[in-house]
Image 1 (tube, rainbow, N blue to C red):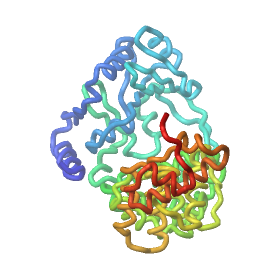
Image 2: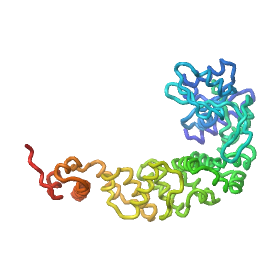
Image 3: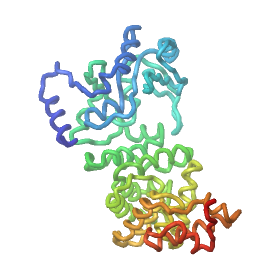
Image 4: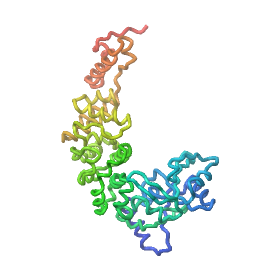
Length: 414
């Protein structure tokens, strides 16, 4: 059943039934032995404990759940004590802020003490622990993330957030400006949820957009690492085009990356779908970057290498089949997709076929064969020559012919 239909039926039923009725989610994760066991340990010790945030939100939307968060009135010290037993591994993820991670059967459960924010600086918050679920809900970012569920799957909705699920709306809790100033990363999270749920969210909340416009300069106080971590989540969604274009329209994108070529994003995603390749943040970032763009975000070494590689390969024309052999099928397809979208061209089936033929037909000449006859840098040169001859033969030549063509006389087997 489509997400929109599911949400409409589920919420319609909930709104129409008596107040005594508790909306219930029946997703597999909530019935799992691990999830139930963790809540029971907390409850049997006299504490309240609820599933909260994304796992509840996604279950209401009939979307897969990846992470399970739990909110409790137990202090971090008490939570640590309760799970210092066999069958659990405990990691003090953010102990000073009330968070520990309990791992059961390889599945992590993030347990956080209910809290309220005391002092904030736009990046971090000093917290006071609480036993009040409404106070805990009020300190969260968006209304869709302020739903709780008990061990039976019954939903607790302290702020009346369910009304924002039909249709789905991304709205800040309480005063939007206050929420943003508590942590400016929430600006990017706002657009990330719009990108993530692009098929369900039809409109942008005008109150949220006005607050973002007023406070977007605050993004500069954030570390480049936090900005990139959130930005790449946006770029990794199935179709972030609408969110990115809105970020560009109101000036947010320019605060973190040059948006000179943002118009490329829709065409790139269309081409990605044609090629049946997964969303990839570096590919998409290169596509919307201007030619002289340098790395201004805190990339990992792997991401930085990939960004520089793709930018470099796009500066000159390369044989796509050679790129498969020298790098990978994924790099060759990325170069094809970016080049096609940047040039405003139609995707050529012959280019796609060439990549797939190279991928399915490895060159018969390898480095260990060449190194029997030549040494040093010459090995790499001869391998590339062999690959070109193999490609030119339409992947039909053989080892002896290729070796002869690159000037190597193979020794007969003893």
